[in-house]
Image (cartoon, rainbow, N blue to C red):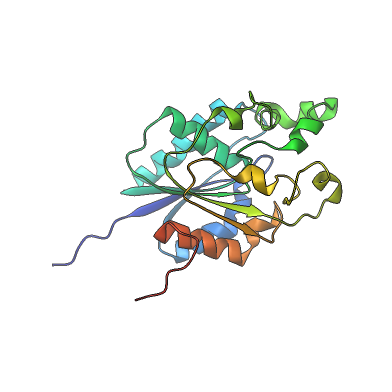
Length: 223
């Protein structure tokens, strides 16, 4: 008798100001690795994080369950990671597998601290973008430690020297390496990539697949 294979589904959540198209290469790689994939598009500039979390994460879970998923993973970019943290602080997901966050501002970003002082940015950013600063009452810093299997990938290259001046230490042009870290995370890796280009990096995609499969970014050698 053959064992029934566990059906695993991965929810993709893009970052602030992006669309589901930004996650296309990661989606294709996951499908080639035999995962069911649900790539969620959501209006990141229009609603607060609390509403976006319910909208995007709930939609992803519903679609994975409709596909018959036994286990549900997440791969997120930037704001998408904060949506998952917010959702899982409010809800229990019994089918939860592993989570990979790419360039997530888990402690906020100093870039937001500066830009939200500007009128034109406040009009464009929307409530979610404005809530991604480093103040204690900004959303990322109110969520506490994570209690699920989480792998964090940080970028350490920037194509925007001006924005990098606002960020302490190494950064990806939008988020410092230090800010991507969060208490309770399972694994962490820093790679030489920028905030937008990490979504197209073969190395980032490979590490993402490693973590989803094994819970580690380091590929295990067969015994």
